[in-house]
Length: 442
Image 1 (cartoon, rainbow, N blue to C red):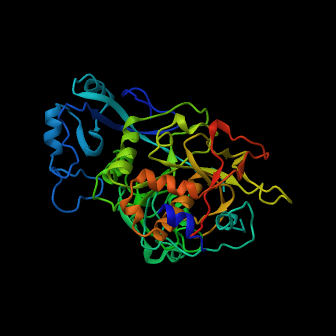
Image 2: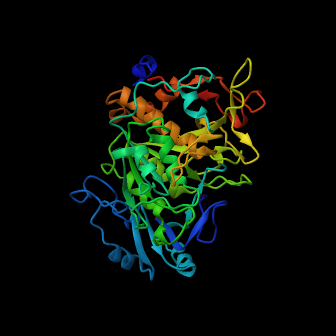
Image 3: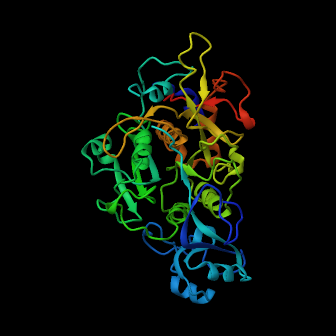
């Protein structure tokens, strides 16, 4: 991939049951119980222990029985999910039982299940976001030129679903997008009925046929939230950790094809920049990247914080994407990509941001088929998920076989340095960020 990418240029906190991460909602009565390594409670997700045949989405890979595990643990709660990739279980129980289990010598920690924050903050007759991607320099010419489309590559969109029941939305994707799983059993299945159309917007930027960078990629849609519920058709909240259940399944080798791309446009950043890390989330991301061989693209967040202080964005296994605006692209001279920063939000920064991408006033499709202006790193991330699909298509089988760390560094190395500046045109960037913009060269 290194040679191809450089030459084929044609076109929360370690927390107890009583502490909750800042700026994240919680799932009442739902807890993650993580065991010590030598406890022998959860069978590991290994080739030797894996059951034969495909594993249903969100379920563990071994033949271990949930009721038997609950009895072994001696809990009055219900083991809802076995999270074998991170040596944990999701249990439905009250706070008193959670506190009792926290004292169990076999238990490493007990955390309450959390709901992370989506990173769209504000609602172009132009689509400068796509326009910017086909140029090495910070210029716009009202066109988007490309050669590859990401065909043959798969992007997993973990979000609030996709409104395929709307004819305009369905036409934007055609047969390339399908609902892989819906934790809510929504009617229609997997439909995006969130009030801000978060999942549909994210999917359109990653793989829409007119709005996306990966417009030929296959999109597997997993609905794991309603963000928030938008009506009676949104389905019943399962009351369990749909997020970790999804990440655990993807972290199990063999469930998703190696070299697939996972987009996560949510996280734990908050308006006060209070640190919020969660080792269970971090272990799931590491498993997806290191064990399952997946490309994990994560939005940096919108609160002007340091990504080092939050789960997912603090990990080298996450390809973290910050945001830019177009205000520096219309200058008469010395044009630059400006850090996304306005009254509604700003990009998170830091040394672990792999690249910046358009995030302010870019076009994205809503669940009613309209295409307004939208802002947030929720959109910067899927732009790069689509770019990964295009790059991996151009690189043949490289993304399927190479170490994921190499895949990350090779894509970073195609980026143009020193085009991204602060909103006022100054440098350096905050928190040790590298000024990098990855443009679509293939």
